[in-house]
Length: 430
Ligand code: UD1
Image (tube, rainbow, N blue to C red; front, side):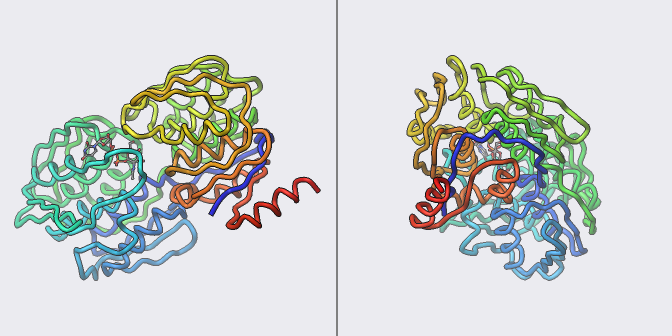
């Protein structure tokens, strides 16, 4: 599937942000750690989430969608600790089922995760954490197996700050015997959200949001009702969309504190930003100016916003430098962006971007989720029509992307065939 769009309209209006996908993935895994019923609200209706729900159902949990954004889960009847359905390999966060099942059943076997192709994505720190809790881990035949006769608290020092490893170890440790300390833990808002959800189920986790997390294992978790935090990256994407189209967009249902790194970069680039209790307004009147961006773990600039901000810098005055310090292969979209007229040189994990005055519409391919969204933003700022192919990637993480952009005044449509693209282009002429 592809998006076809005609650039040039400034985006104006309001957009409401959904629940955080990356928090939701950890929270859904946490939900299977009790035999009681869990109700989760503000769940984004995106592909990654629906795949994980399918996997949870596949191993025997009862999953009932109460409405588009609310799900009820009861995992009393889980019959298997092996997760290997055909879809699960496509999502990164399938690994959270390892921590959740290991914690609850002391055994788990999960297909090695896939996800976005943005560089090597080892899970050694997850496995190191499980081993510190007394589990043995083996990777064979494409599966990761973990089991523990006795799961006990342990001391884990993460060699790299990893969101996934922090959450996974927290999940397993919540039901281990005794206390666990995770040092050099990730501090991302979604780590805090998963900890809050586990605590609302009766876990005893302290320090989430700092780099030392202390978990006192409990013998059992109970049911809860929990509402997921807003998605920082979805919000940031619309903020850049406003900036790049010289628009005026109020992004609602956000926690402005979580957006500070993005807000301050956009302000440096010349945008006006107002913060409200649960909204931010981005106004961009003039051409933006260059800056430096380096991706870092939270509270640094998020790697998941690197392609979007780079696309904006490619249209800004002057030369910008973007350093990607989390994933080594995250500039693949630059070749696609060059087809729209961008002028950037990538050497290793650094992109030197000379801003150009305009982009011109082109046919490009989304190489992954966030770069895909960034290319759509580029298309919305370009002169003429653009086509972004492989938008299945984008659908993994953005709910109603086309509808929300359309509401803000973008000329964009989801299409499948060349004929539909031709029809769209003709409709623009008439
Ligand atoms: C999560 C997010 C992803 C985001 C990333 C960084 C989910 C589902 N995905 O991914 O959108 O881009 O955080 O904010 O939440 N590493 C190791 N060994 C490990 C684990 C990680 O070396 O065992 C390295 C990675 O290669 C990477 C860095 O640590 O260089 C950070 O990765 P991590 O925070 O784990 O990313 P994910 O949890 O996979």
